[in-house]
Length: 293
Image (cartoon, rainbow, N blue to C red; front, side, top):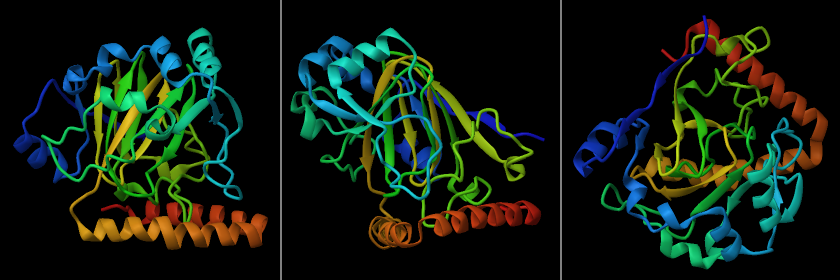
């Protein structure tokens, strides 16, 4: 038995009614081929243009190493001038990534080049777009977004392999307590079932994003991404209408995150060990019980 992956649905275009009824409400992922074709960014956002707009600003970089539960989840590995980094990912494979580059703070000129798809749904957080850059072979570890938004993730200049899981598989994915990421940065495209037996039989979806493709990921969806080429993406985020989801988002961002930080600071190694052991126990229990049913 292995992980069961089906293909994410792909459309060229979609009406508001079809999107809401068939993807937003049932919390299903979707790739839209043409949505970003109407943006100035579709042709304008070349590597050279980005270097011109952003320039020599120094940016934090992240690698694909195992997440250390004793450290902040978004602790950078190193830093580099943006222009040098863009040259690097065009020239050769590297596992270094730029995580959540903010065009509002870092490069205002980019804001005129894309449009939130408000014709499909409301609730967009216009002040919180995020851009992501990666070299060939770099990996974004398996996680879900702590603030639980709906995400419209548009990719540029290259290919990105994406694997998705519904939030109901959280325990079987070895989610760490008081966190939104998995126990270890295992290669979910080729997992070690001897080490992680609870992964056997889980069901997900996968897709390959190419230039101009937009992936809709509903709230709470787990995602793992691998850059097949040096390339980049922008994520536009929107609130779900559910007050329960909004309340959970607020809890994650305040109480859960703060408690996790306090425990890391005061009980470092013991706390890390407790988190890992509990994640394993929960995964094994869910497997034995056949959850999610």
